[in-house]
Image 1 (cartoon, helix red, strand yellow):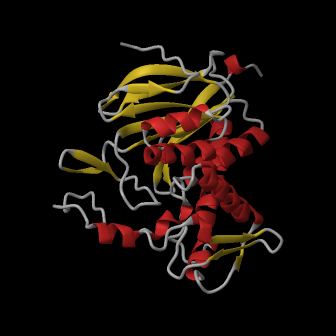
Image 2 (cartoon, helix red, strand yellow):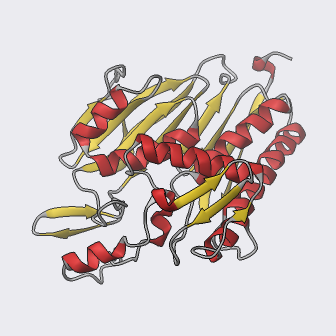
Length: 314
């Protein structure tokens, strides 16, 4: 059956504590719902695997054994942790799944009246450090060396889930669709009119207004923003995205969009760019093959990596 004889079917729901929009192209509503159910089941399975809220999950088991003993885990979780550590090395620690053990001394609910002290900030990161996540490939174990250390997949999990759901749907014969996990978007195939899917790049300070639309073909786009959760001291805006190496929040960037072929990698890298800052982040992206980015800085200036051309809408 040609794509033109098919229709879009979309469902919006909450998974992994976030909004997911799942769109598939199918011949009828029954098929569309069947495909979306498959994606939901896969995302729910991953949520159980990586959840640190579920005391029975493998992730919780790793965390509760920090400083005590290595934990044997499934191949899937082992591989995700191994890839996470590779991204930590690539970004010089700007991305770090052990950030989950950061002492939350920065509050973004309006209760903070002054900056934490230097001592408080430096002690908040005592249990953070990807170098202390010890993995053993042969025995498929993960060990957190420092007691009280924790890992979490908040900066990579949704992207991973979007990738896995996409692969599963393609295996089931879905020719085209989009998984959008609160800005972690993975698309494949084309729309029913034969054109590429389009993604809106919005102004962080006015999300109703897109400043550009970009076609995406079998690619992932992940947008991270810090324009909603921040505090301001002495004219400096401190975002909720914390540098796991220093304990200080990132400054200077409002939003980052990463374009590449896999949402998991894009998810991790988008957070890292905030931590690196505009110049280092841009230089980093320009050295990566097949990865592009759009950065909106704190002055609302749009900066792009070298291979992106924006067709502005205004």
